[in-house]
Length: 102
Image 1 (cartoon, rainbow, N blue to C red):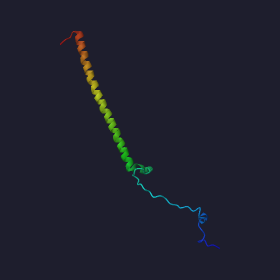
Image 2 (image 1 turned 120 degrees about the vertical axis):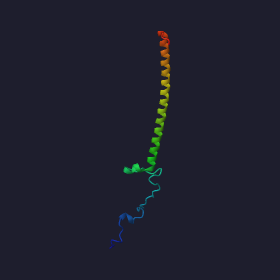
Image 3 (image 1 turned 60 degrees about the vertical axis):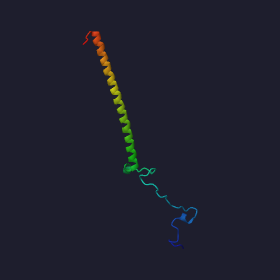
Image 4 (image 1 turned 90 degrees about the horizontal axis):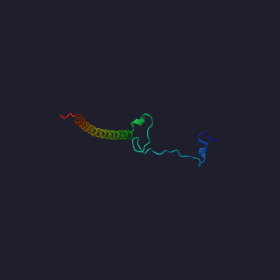
């Protein structure tokens, strides 16, 4: 009669071909490192790389919008100047046709 201590806990443990080693690889990257898996839930907002990347994208977009606004302002000034020249030319033509010369 075998004692309970002498018997293997699992029946498959007695067979050497079926024994499996349960090991896990150590984590090699921290949470903020490039290539690390992104955290889920409330930790997703606390990842430094993600925040830095979002901030850089925001700055890039703001710079593009600033450049577009500056270009639009420049074109608006050119159009205003052209409109003033056309108004002056129109006034000159009306003054010549109406006989009103000052």
